[in-house]
Length: 533
Image (cartoon, rainbow, N blue to C red; front, top):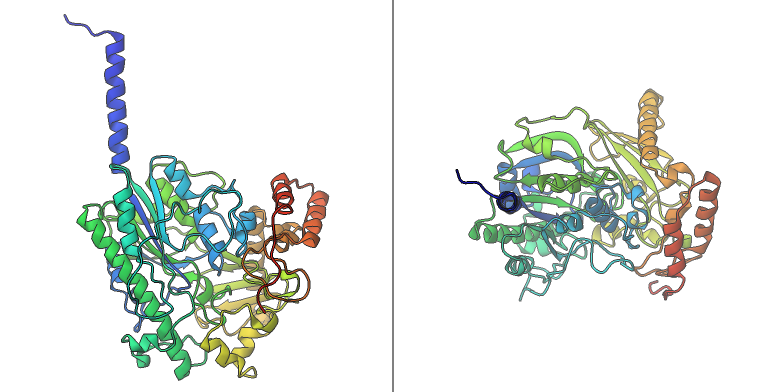
């Protein structure tokens, strides 16, 4: 009888073990995130838009799952993107939770977690940003692939980056057998738009639907059409990327996600926690992983749920500190409508969006969104929501038009002072125009939602609720600043609010040596005086 030595048996065992591991690694899905810039959920064909034509997004919706109630963590690009990358709310990610600040190194991001497990990462277009990375060697979204450019684009406001060609370069550079995780960050539909470009490129202004928080005029219709053209450009590049994956035989095992960072760059949308500021498109397709295709789900989900979803799909452990919840149970379900009854709300918030107030202060907001109501808490209602000279609203023809008619109801809503609490019935008031917070009939709902919001914020350790909210006002802004009163240095922590935050943390028994170290290091770095009027 033939026998085998223990060493031989061990060798054979290890061979099959590593072979199985390699096979499993090879079968892990690729991940392609397509994230647009400043796009509200309603402006894709699959969500009912009649003037924005998005055949790629619409086809993916038929092949995968469309989410009716997806929300971003913040209505501004860099904090929303940071939240998506970390799987955490903006009040949980320190400086990364405010616009144009820095991104602490200790924050775990899904591209790096996947890279550590054998994935090949990269991005094209706009990654995390704007902001600065003094503690990191590269952008949290991964290595950059932006060498290819277009000879021509349909409008001046559209980036000349050839996103699809850059994606092809990324695939060519990827080592064989490695799954990839790629971030396609379109610059569209971020302003500035070329005025009249939508109509010039075939969008019929009579088909355009102007949201009810904007005046419906020929000018605003044209402005909204120009915005629509940029969404169509985003869609066209994703079509080319999917064609490349199909050509390589890799499309069926690629998780394709279509979303945006925050809402449309119009008054009372972007930089606001109303529906058109934080309600996002979200479509997920994955031929090999989603059996029941063409489903529309009403579960409330957040873009912070994407990081744990990607990790679970790849077989990577989800860090305990992630607040997001994996969407895999929803993707694997065969149900339409509501799948998980516990997914009946989401949270959002905002801090400083631009330099628009004395001392570079922000306009902090926290909000809870349910199927019927939006409850919004303006933490400092004594501050202007739109800032000095209304600079906390992106410049646009629609913005200028509304500023010329400040006595109108819509302009007062967009630019006027706001109370501590706002409550909107989304079923009867989808554009959030009628604040019910002062209506005594809604007092029980107001109190219930306010208490639930505060409970969740305390659970997440929100400094604004725990008593040291000044820490948000201390964070540096690395983008340009304006010559406004008080502290206005670019790239510098505000010393007054640093001290207030440290004093309050000390009285609360909270230690934050990492924050103190960043502040100390920042003092040795150059800053810039205001460079804008």
